[in-house]
Length: 354
Ligand SMILES: *Cc1c(COP(=O)(O)O)cnc(C)c1O
Image (tube, rainbow, N blue to C red):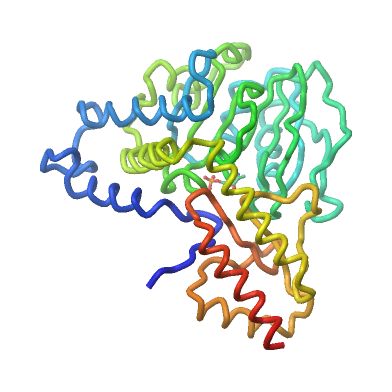
């Protein structure tokens, strides 16, 4: 029985990827050994890591531009502190667009002066602040392109001479933007790339080495660049599955092609919300996310009814985050249009029977 998986994270992966990664657990590359019982220094795994890092750079169009791709541990949350540890000398600026950027700013303050350049907290983060200015004396400016919890997304990447640092956990590989605008991009794998347990970090090498503090080896990006993400034992299963997803994406036409599908899916769903008076969208229209669609019932009395219809239609994971309430349909790369149509059908069904 097919489930329609709208989970926000960990979240849906392509079925073929799940099947291949399951096979790898049993027998990797016909070696009669499991992926998770071989050395990470073995030829089989070194090839996986090389392939994963080069696919990441290739898909983002960042090859031969001074960037390195790393697969690290500790989640996106570890990057909240690692970015500041490695890059904050005098002052850093943060765009506060939700729970995750609030956490990133909090960690940065442990290492120096970190200031909020603009915030949308006044409206419970239902929009993206605009019209702010970015001082040129900042060490970096940190943004969160997609706000997973609130369903907002930055459409225009800010133009600035300052290093842009970005938490792209929930929209990396989903749309075609100029990734070379960033000095550093990080993304926890479990939203649009793989299982939890690894975080992709894309870093322009020349932004490093500019802070005066001593950095512990494990938290120093230069260590991981030098050791090609093998300074310590990498999370082999998470890296392998991420590699399979990146291969899947490449085989399916890469980011440009998936972006078209993502635009189509989100347009259909937002139209269904806007054209049905039983529902209202949470995020400001111009800032709506292509990945996380947040909405609510206009009348809470219909909740039990709607939840039952969703359940009967095998819809999984549409409950909103506790800080927003209502519903959130996460429509990541691997979710197909058919699943979106099932949800739309259920929304229309509610209207018919009310
Ligand atoms: C999920 C998420 C995080 C947290 O990721 P962890 O890997 O659990 O630390 C951070 N930022 C964004 C945008 C997220 O969606």
